[in-house]
Each structure stands twice: as structure tokens, then as C-alpha cells.
Length: 288
Image (cartoon, rainbow, N blue to C red; front, side, top):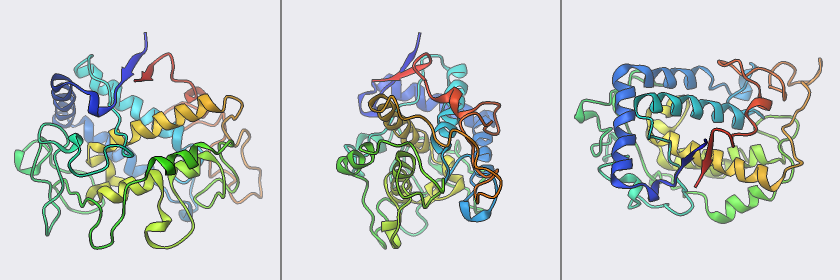
């Protein structure tokens, strides 16, 4: 029987408490930081010339679907009633949204060092110390909207534009792919400054702080953001039943992406699973 992932705005107070408690217990046990380490290890940019399965590549969506599932399974081993809620940032798009309340994700960082001082994940509470990151910083940080270089959250119109794509992905299968749903949703675009970032990427930048870069899992809102990304992919799949994962076959010898991206039946590290095995989630979970 599939379980349901709910919009975070529809969670009851007990559901919010159970989710937070499970996340804090995962952190206390040390298992949360294993997820942080995995994301850092697999955060490979296309300019590095290495194999990429998590970012700037076709498997961005299935890789994060699996990542989210593994996290959710860890939470449900602590509390079987818990599922990962999603954050629709086209609707709950201000710092006043319930998402950022004292009993849930906590709020923005303070001026100066951007340290989050409210909510269950505040460093001063003693339950949320950053152990793996891109810097030596030990506290959760946020900088909503980046006031020094302002950026806004994506709109429903931005999402609609991505949803109108009818092809999953396109060569050269990286951050420069000119069309295809994957790159539209992942959010790499031409331009400079904030114009370079759309949808998924833009949300990371709007939150700022630790949500920038490979250590973004250190902010628990990462999971709510990626649950919404997964929901959008799920809706796109329903709208485009004939548009399968691409590339179906691995890029051949001589192609710049040879052995750098995962085709339909290639294994995704660190798990022994292929994109083909992650296309249908209906037997495991659904979205409300």
C-alpha cells in the first residue's frame, strides 16, 4: 500500500512534530550526516570532466528520487507514520510562510553571519551541529532572497514553462542542454548573475547559506524542496507517458560525454539501481 507525501502547509501540528523529531533522531544517531557526506561526494560539476550521476546530467531526477527514498526509509524506521512533505515554493514564497515557523524549519539567518537562531535546527539548541560541509562552519545558515544581490523564488509560470517540454533531456546531457525537461527543472540557463539559475537551482540560491553547494543537505529544508522537484517530475511523467528517460543508450566512444553520464540501464552510485528502476514510484508513495 503506497503512503502519501503531503504539502507541508497541510500537515497537522502532530505531523510536523513527528517529522522534526525523526529528523533530529537521525541526526543524533549520526545517520543524517551520512546523507550529507553522500551528497557532497556525488556533487560533481560538468566542468570537472568526471562521471556525473547527481547533478548537471540526465540522472539528476532519478538520483535524487532514490536519495529521497533512502532518507524517507531511514525516517520511517524511527517513526513509521512519517513521510517527507513537499514545499511548493510557487505558493509559499515568503519568509512569513508556515514552513519557516518555530516548530518546523525555523526562520532566516541573522544579519552578519546568517546563523539561524530559531526553530529546532538552530545551533544554540544543541541538536544541530554541522559536521560535514564545504567550509568549517558549524551552524545552520540562511540568507533569504540574498538582499545584497536580490533573487526571487520561481513562479507558477516558470514551472508551467518547464512542464511544456515534451522531451526528457537532450545532448550534450549537461548544464548546457538547450531543451528538455530535466535541465529546465534542474535550472541551468544561459546568462549571467541570477539569470543563470532557474527553478531547482534558484530555490537553493534564494535560501542561501548552507543551501549553496554540495553541503546543502545540512539544511533540512533540502528534503522538502526535493520532494517538490520529484512531484513535478512525477506530474510531467503523467503528462508525457511516451517520453522516456534519455539517453536510452550510453554515449559512444568519442562522444564528450562518454562514460560521464548514466543511460537508462546504467547503475547509479552509491546504489545498485538504474534510472529505469526509478521511473515508477506508484507502488511506494503518492503525492496528495
